[in-house]
Image (tube, rainbow, N blue to C red):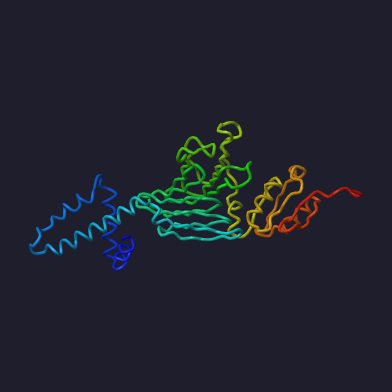
Length: 313
């Protein structure tokens, strides 16, 4: 029935417009039922002129309304999934005019509905340049939060699949306004009350640890250099005096040949600054080795960084 309904819509613009109007009525009028809709058609009595044609129209109406019910009760019917692999970026133009730029190893689910536009960031990072539509808020679901906008530009990153000591998610507002608020009852982060962001701000939300909202579970607002945060769009990663361990974790997002640290604790005090090419972990490791006097070697499918052993050992 659903396939037939879609084929019927494809036959003409008038069919599609009729379906949209019927769908809007179905969603907007509380308590509307098939029987009430059929009663409104006022079919002629059997045997009277027009009865056969009216019956066919009624059958088509019922079929269409059943299809509408399927679409209304199954919001995932129009979902689309967009993904990128490791080291890959992708630009997607949605039907509403919104532009999504997906960073490495990212997966999103998109559902554009009459009342709102929903995107679920499963993992990874994406830049959203939202088409203005005040009547349909644009909502990005990440971790346990909703990022709500109407027409704006912002960056969202999920960190739930990263190291345990990382944040749950981060949001950077480039222009416009967004509200970040809790969604549902599942508590994955320390977000408890809505946060209204201003352009240029970055919100980083820590993971919720042990069911407690203690010092380790916190929100951090800062104003970073936005051009550095979106440097991945031009194939670069920019570090400004960040811990070496964080820099390595960031570079590993873009490489199928990750960097491994032989003794992470001994390297934890080292810091990194500079501009590096995404996807070239070996060159990055060699640069770190020159900078900090480390050793580099390949071990299977990984590049290993370690401290140099003293002479004679």
